[in-house]
Image (cartoon, rainbow, N blue to C red; front, top):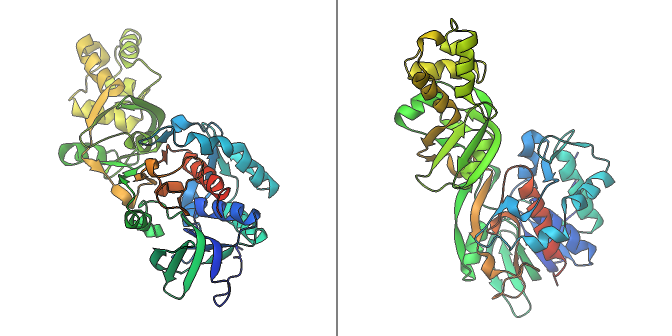
Length: 404
């Protein structure tokens, strides 16, 4: 059972540090600031902390990635993330997980998951908060923030509180049903900070018209593919859905696509399908083309590709140009989506507070002393696979070292 550090509404209205947002970045920042002897209050409008941690990784929390590097992140300033990532590495967070004897495993490509439940990570972080004497106030809405001579004054729906350092860790706009809002951007605008327009990232692609009919008829089919777009390439799983395409490969490439950008999908990345079909024709000329293609892609997909090309012949009856056309449809499928499913299902937000406004060392605003932005609200977005959690841990840890 998850327990929260006690918060008494009538005491301690003045804090060294107030952090808005009890997600991954906010919790880490609160823990580290508390360890440094700062009085810390962690606020969130939600009824429970760390809801994104709870649902992540299918409920098992992909809490970091062993191979984290700056190359795994998107930003208008690709170098901004370097300092924080160097100062708090995946192995630092793994050490914390092991301190609490939480069993974990590597699923694939360096992705680490809990063997059990994501609630173990949340419980761990809350215990660390309690040990660092962090106060947590949930169901608390911040109505107004103003700068004072000594820091900041916050008016909530229940009280007025003060702090020297204010940290915004409210995340982006992804998955609003989990309580995500644009609050962090509103605060940035209040203090005249530049914002890189937020867009949904790590999000399924959707289609319209004939292409929607095509993919919809394959809903539920999954396979490993290589997807290429805008000079980026990922080899991971793809899933056909009733609205379009999803799966890790599609989520990864979605972060790199602009409106109208096309992608190329190799549905059999480890097979030269044309060479395979020519060989099959020599060995098994009486086999139907669908039978041959079912050896390299799922049967439903093979049948659908043949149907869409009006091909039902036996291999012996098919000239090489016809085999080449089908091979291209598998090894070099070129498509353009009409968009994405948006913030409703996006795992993260691309864009956010412009990194030019912040110190990469301290995460403090250059123009507003005492104001900090960390985590997803900043224009740093990780690829799929635990990288966004590592950014949360690293940015929260980095900022905490400088909070007054």
